Image 1 (spheres, rainbow, N blue to C red):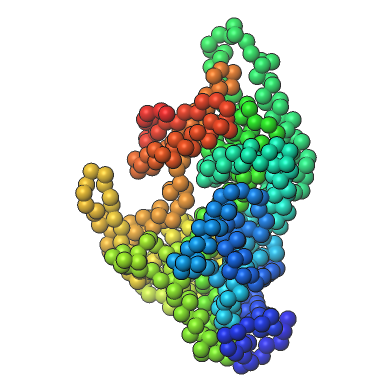
Image 2: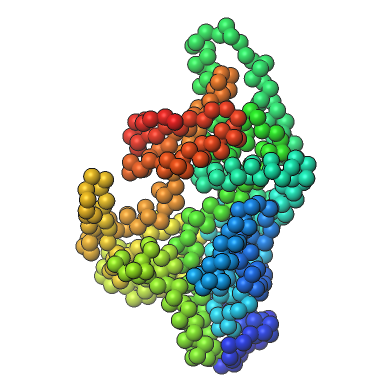
Length: 504
């Protein structure tokens, strides 16, 4: 590690070189480890061009990915918007892997490179390594090997079975990705360890699951026995099942072994990204808090000039902008702004609490231990529980948050929560629901299938707040489901009280 003394500038001017990047990285690392006490993966920082950044966009930011036409379509769309000036590029992309890979844009100034290294290489890095969702549901050490395996396997399938058949299979699988994650139990890690053995075991089980049907077919069974066997079959298949691709991969009567393996690849990748969707506010808030603290510490130590600090603060402010609800720029709540505001407020509550803070947060108010409070929050919560636990009246007032009710039969919105004791709790609850993936995604489950009869796959959509599925998307998705299942697929709507509506 380079020896950077207090008062010695890390860089001077806008242009960067690799020596300056090394000096900045080492100084940032010293603050991250010695002051904040972060726990990190090894950093791998790569400088890439604008075209490479656009290419990373198209493949979900991953350095390895199998081929599919949708990635090229995404690339062309982003490229056209960028060249027309309708959209800028991200300053960085960071990957939840070990080592933690950060892509930094070569067009960044040196001040901006320091900012994004602190943001991605240390803020996101710490969050990926320590948050319980990432630790439980993803394998940072195995993801790159798994992606290489997936790319090679799908390429071999294209050579052996034809690009068109593989493409149609991937089209159908991709459409089901949002409803193909485990939300409540831990899946097998994304790793190549023992992958060959697991694949042989899966293929043997799949063949047994299909062919045993004909061995047990008995047309003379009494109805009571049939009902008992149906209940036993549902228990054996683990119904109801929320992960659609998992159920189809395991039980589809028509899929070949290579098709089942491709479905497994797609749902494993969907599962890998699921914790990121659950922690958008926390992940970005953590990265913003870390880069802000580190850059301020370096500036106070005389290692960053006032000019560079002003440039960094300008970009920092742009990221955290939250337009008011009546501003033409308003498109929703900014997760960066919400996460950073709550985390800055946690520090204030720990160091200089008010009487209101002591009433709302008696366990942390005045503790002066904001570092450990934040690290515990980063490790232990997801967005909705983080908001429920730490959104304070002070932040609600500062961001001017309020809650609306939109009743179907009412032509007007109703403000049902303002800045009073009851209103703070209502806003806290409403924002918690707003950032909850489980509340926003449709809840669709496999509830039954008679493998010994017509093999019709029966799904149920559990409506939230009485909101039905979009008709066009619903029919297109059912078409893809029938393509993978091989037989009829039906879905009905159920209200929260369990009452069913029309089937399809």
